[in-house]
Amino acid sequence: MLKTSHAARRDLSLLIEQPVARPDTTAQVLIRPLPTQARFSLRLNEADLEGAETAAGFTLDIPINTRLGLAERSSIRLGPNEWLLTGPYRDAEVIAGQIDAALGGRFYTLVDVSHRNVGFIVSGRRAADVLNSGCPLDLAEAAFPAGMATRTLMGKAEIVLMRLDDTPTYQVECWRSFSTYVHDYLIEAAREFEPSIA
Image (cartoon, rainbow, N blue to C red; front, side, top):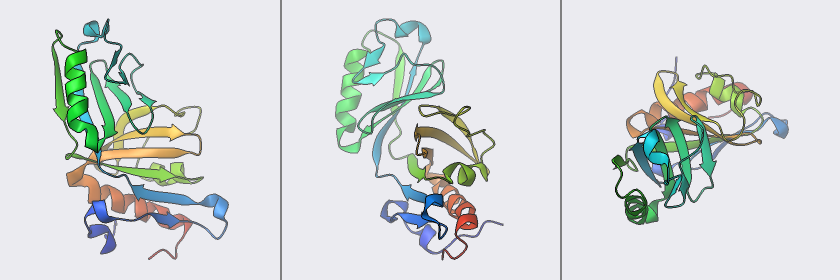
């Protein structure tokens, strides 16, 4: 049964990094919330990609279930006509205007989901083990290399899971209404690697 700690019930924007490790520090797992980001859900017909392979610094012409970009701006293609675009929160209005200018004349929808979504970073040698406690995907490097991104489940909550690098570092995106559940699930799963965590 998943237990909810009092600390995890606080507003997730105030959470601090919570390292979880065995005495052997090579087995470290770090779970931390991401700061607020600008996030947009973009829908654009695949046929309309021609001439709009990039828009506002986002690369749209990438394979489905991949992520491309840096912390400043990244595009995650979740389906043939669906992207999750992320960037600095301070630039949300600028990004929306730039995308509108880049995609002018095409039929598309762009929805600001910055306040709907919450992100967590899960990194370290045991990160895949922690995630696999509630996620059915094969997270081995050969099956889920850096740059992969897809919708999946964490326990009973739908998430978007991305592998950012070979550390490995993963990003977990979920709706804010499920964020306490997802955060608690990750912390509970990490207890296996450091049973003394409070």
